[in-house]
Structures are given as structure tokens and as C-alpha cells.
Image (cartoon, rainbow, N blue to C red; front, top):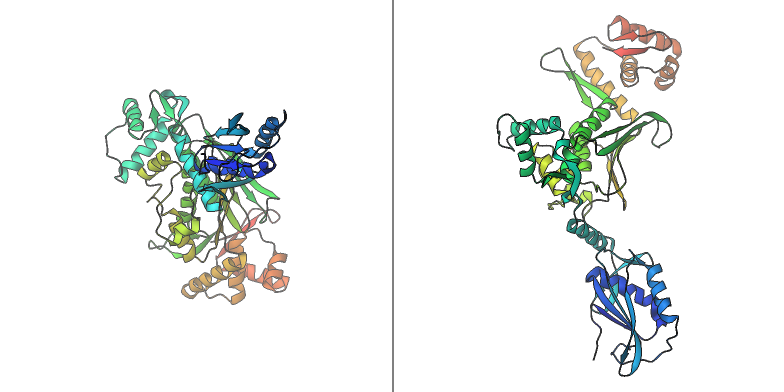
Length: 456
């Protein structure tokens, strides 16, 4: 006698069609194939019910409308103990499968809805089974960007993570990429193409916004290139739009020590993570948005782990690598320091500066955000630094220190705004500006209307 198990489900009639859809989803997610019987009791005994010409079509239509991704079951009639039953045989390799928009898993003979972490495990496992980066691309070995390979080679040998083979010629360039598993026969695989193609395989969108929302653009650009090129472009763009504070003079007594508002190591780690862990078979581009209050770094694909990024910051966890070949290559040139420690480094660096971090994990993209210090925080810090400098140089009043800090932060700030923010009369602002000029702490650049004050 037949009995229910993890791959077999019994239903008395097609009146339980909705419940059967949950069983199909759960069995596919657990085993990839199974059977549903309509016309059997839970104990396997036949249960006669009316089967019309449209009954099988109704079952087929319900499966088509409900199970996603779509499957193509075999639906047929069988006789068990001279009673006619409907048998639905199904299989599928595109898990996870949903029924009515929800995901289920088979436990013994029951269907249980998947938790978000369980669903993520299935999705990650599916990615690893058919990993995009290992597939052969259409690009020949003639399409390798030799300059990028040369730069990579020098960085990797300089940090002793790759043996120095001497001068890298065209032939040994291909041998090098083969040794990194980036070549399949006479073609670059997708990992090799993304890292070293000269055909600019990726797109990076960069933008600066006036506020904390995507409203008014101050700057924007769209750049194409391979991973190594875009990492450099991303960092150049971010550094160009960061605010810096001055912390004393370096040891040579000539050079000012300029400190970025966000640690550059944290930003670079976040940018590299974005390219190392992206899902590259999605039609979504990498993106870096600089808002007034934060920097947001986005990549295609959800976070590739059952854990959250913050878990990697404070727990000892093994890294989940969506793109093993890409991560291995970045590691060799020291762009990736140690697998699984990237988020720990970012959190530690930001915590030391009192900076908040956040992330948003969606189905098709992942965004990591580092919040910038507020203008008030920067002004207070610059004022304190100026006090330290004035004690060694020219004595300044508190209001002079405050005006100097605001000019350093916003060189184009107007006298009227200075008066309002410093809570002093406009004529006092003019007097302080003159005093700072006389003490050779600021100089006016450009015209009176369109110029700015440069802090020396």
C-alpha cells in the first residue's frame, strides 16, 4: 500500500487543490521531485470522487498560476484498487519554488513555511551549484587588458602573495590567468572577463546629492570598466567629495595632516566588498551615492550569507564567497586582506571615529551605508583643532576660531550666513575676516562675487 512521505502527498479530492500547491513547493525545495495523489486518504486508501473532463485541466492551470518558477508536471489518471485517482508527477531544478508567493519546505509529511534565513540558505546554495563566474564567456584571450594584468601582477608580487616571475610577457600573462582559473580553454571565463577584460564589462554609477535624498544632483557620472578599473574610479570619486579636517602639522613641519571625515580604509573595504560579492548575472549596476549625511555603496544581488553583515563584525564566522575566483584574485593583490574580516574592519574603523553604519538587504541588491559626521560635529572639531594651533602660533578669540572653522568647512559661505550661524553682527564678521587676513590665516581667491576664502 502507498503511504505519504517527504516526496509523496495524498489528497482526498481536488477540493484540497490549494493545500496541494503548498506540498508541491515544499517537496521541490527539499527533494527536487515528487508526486501528489488526488483520490487517496491519509492512510493510502482510495477515496472515490467525481473526475470530469475539466478536472485535469483545472489541476494543470492551478499549478501554472501558483508555482513559481514555472514547472511542467505530468498529470495522469491511474486506478488503485479499481478506483480512479489523479497522479501529478513533478520535478524542477530552479529552487527555491514558491506557492501563492510564499516558500515552503517538506518535513516528514508536512509542509512548513520557510524562515527568511532558511530561504537565504537555499538561494545561496543554488548560486553555488551554478556559479556564474565559472562559466565560459564569449571573450577571447586577445581581449585581455594587459595594462590591468601588469598592474595586478606588480601589486601581487610586491606584497609577496604571488611569486615574482620576472618580466610578464604576453605568453606568461595568459599562463598567469590560467593559474588563477580565469581561463576556460581559449576563452576568458566570466570571472576573468570581469577582472581583466578591455571591453569594459561593468557599469558604475556615481552621484553626489545636495541633501539626504535623491533629489538635487550636484554631480553625477557613469563609468564603464573592469573590476580593477572601477575600484580605482570609485575611490577617486569618493575622496574628491569627502570633507577633510586639519590635525596639526606632520613631522616635516611643512605639510598639514589632513584627516578625512570617514576613514579611507573603511571606504575602500566597502567598495571592494561590493565588487567581490556582487551577483553579476543580474541586470543591475554598481552604484555609489554621496548624500549630505552618508555614503551609500550598492551592488547587484542580496547579501551572500545566511547571517547579517553585523554578525561578521562581532562574531567569528567563516566567510560566504559568492565569487570565489574574483575574491581569490583580489586577495593576491592585497585588495582583500583576509576572507571574512572585511565587515569587522569597517565596523572597527567607523566605531573608532564614532560613525554610524547601516545596510539594506533586498532581493536583487545590497546597500552598505557609512554616515558622515554632521556639520556641527565637524565645526566643533575644527574649532578645537584651531585652538590647539593658535596656542602654538597666533592667539585667536573664540569667535575668530569659530569663523575660521566654518570657512575651512565651507569656503564659499557668505558673510550674512556667517553672521547668522555665529550669532554675531555682520560688521563683526567683516572685522574678524580682516583680522584673519592680517594674521595670514586666510586669503581671498577669485572675485568678490564668485570667489571663496582659502584657509592657509
